[in-house]
Amino acid sequence: MAAVAAAAGTFARRMARSGVLFPRSSPQVWPQAARQPPGLLPAQRRAFSNNKILVELDTSSGVATMKFKSPPVNSLSLDFLTEFCISLEKLENDRACRGLIITSAIPRVFSSGLDITEMCGKSTEHYAEFWRAVQEMWIRLYGSNLVTVAAINGSSPAGGCLIALSCDYRIMVENPKYVIGLNEAQLGIVAPFWFKDTFVNAVGHRAAERSLQLGLLHSVPEAHRMGLVDEVVPEEKLQEKAVAVMAQWLALPDHARQLTKSMMRKTFRTLSSSHPKTPSRSHFQRTWRC
Ligand SMILES: CCCCC/C=C/C(=O)SCCNC(=O)CCNC(=O)[C@H](O)C(C)(C)COP(=O)(O)OP(=O)(O)OC[C@H]1O[C@@H](n2cnc3c(N)ncnc32)[C@H](O)[C@@H]1OP(=O)(O)O
Image (tube, rainbow, N blue to C red; front, side, top):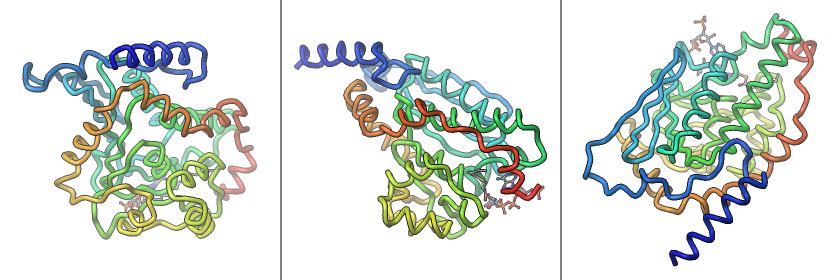
């Protein structure tokens, strides 16, 4: 058994070096933090923060929590996306980190999606930079070697829904006011194909087709029924549930889980190799009538 695990670990490392795996981070195979018996040492915590995002890493469990804290609604501005990618990269490069819980520190909103003000009245260069940042965020999160759990404690339209969809598991707080979905069509715009593919992967083709064409924002029970979220919990149970789910996923050997994730998320490679063009300036102007 030990020999099989060692051989699989070597294979995983070779695959990572050959570029077959996601290129940005190599798999972490049974890091020290995971083998440490719980309770022997007091929990070790590290934190870093910028003005958009707070990250706390518990090195005894290997689990980091990323909290969005960009008022009023955690919109995905260029600054936010840049900070997000930097924070994620730091965690990917930290051998003590194996899992990431993403949640919001802003009441009632997980993320309102792409920042609309970034797509109005700006230069062509700005649109290009912004669009690259949107793609980069998705490529990094969807392709992350970490176990990623979205703890969705508020509404999550459009780009906010994409962040949740890019995680391995979604838990949402039950609240009749919260909604989630890709509502682009309602706004008169089209969700890019990689938003669509990520959505289809979660809910299946028929449900995605109907939801995307109608630009639906789903209530929490509806999102649960269609598989857009995996679990629904009361607000006070969210953190506990996210930690429990994370423990279940982290109980597996990293290399096997990571290779399986890589295999399942093939569209990642399509986007990173074809790198779709930035929508033109006139496209943004027509879209937002600005
Ligand atoms: C061109 C190709 C693009 C294709 C892909 C596009 C993807 C996207 O993500 S587009 C963005 C889509 N997002 C939305 O449709 C969300 C719109 N917002 C809401 O539904 C709500 O704001 C809410 C549910 C997220 C929160 O509701 P509530 O708590 O009631 O807050 P308010 O609506 O009063 O908003 C407060 C404040 O925030 C501004 N704001 C909201 N969303 C955005 C945003 N996405 N970008 C920038 N700013 C946003 C809103 O205008 C309010 O501002 P003030 O009026 O100045 O207070």
